[in-house]
Image (cartoon, rainbow, N blue to C red; front, side, top):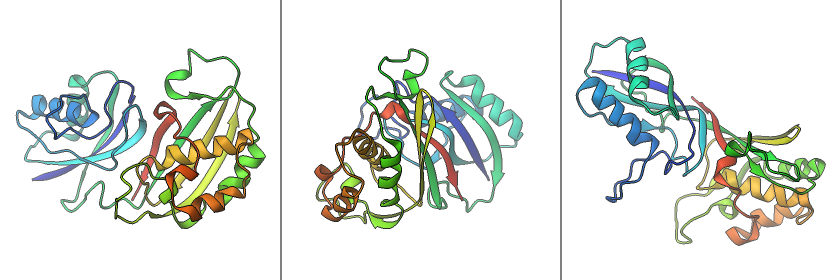
Length: 248
């Protein structure tokens, strides 16, 4: 038995996120596409373990997944074979044999997301697939000041979308937030030990509101303290978010 680790790049447009559906709905997901390709390659079904449940429309530059298989196929042939059966929106960047104990989700110690904004008055046909248009002036100094209040180990319940009765811990540690201007785009890089549902997009949406002057940077402290989703900014569109790296 072998444990194969994959690094995957994908365009999430048109996919219903990473995770295969278990409720009977036939929705297209990244996981299902790779598992279908693997069945064609190996002649048997695999169970693909993902490092993160990316949402519908979210992209990935270096998503990590793993699966166990009883096969002698060389690693290069695994990568090339899977790619030959996958749609153009999904690509296996590398394949590596790891210990049987390795688990792409449980062993992860952090993730880095990038949120990309097109900051100009008119839309960009070349960039809009992977960016969210914000046609308003944004004050990056204020956004960076607000981001500082999010650094560290904090309760991010105000930045979690979902069931109000959710009892799992909403405490996470944000390692860094960088806001980089690359005209006409602005990138928000967020690294944390883990992310709640929609946390990265809700942070991006809140920082955009700060940049527009709708929130003062200091209000981020109040938002965290209230522990209620409605106190933070809007959820930024999924298409601007990309999983850049998974840390181990």
